[in-house]
Length: 124
Image (cartoon, rainbow, N blue to C red; front, side):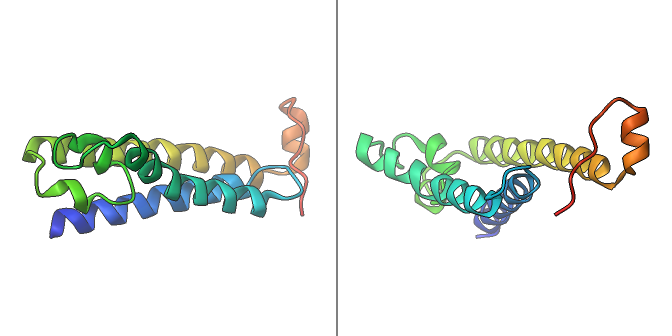
């Protein structure tokens, strides 16, 4: 049960980081893009796995990365569960590093950005 909670929490953190990255885009409708991306990320993987008929008891790895990891946790080996959780946390780490980089660029002054040769980030 604790492993399932770890999967759900790490997936929620990945989705939250993706949302934050999408909200830092320079487009005018970034909230629409962020909402659409998260809806697709949540609904598309289990739909594709269901349409293709991939059984969570036979092939557990794709189901561990979907929004329904509990379908495969019972039949997955412990090392498979550990590696899937480790890879989710690695993706989360990389996404957070990218978010940190973007936040640092957004927080610098316009003159510092001009002196470095980068266009300043427009404020909204």
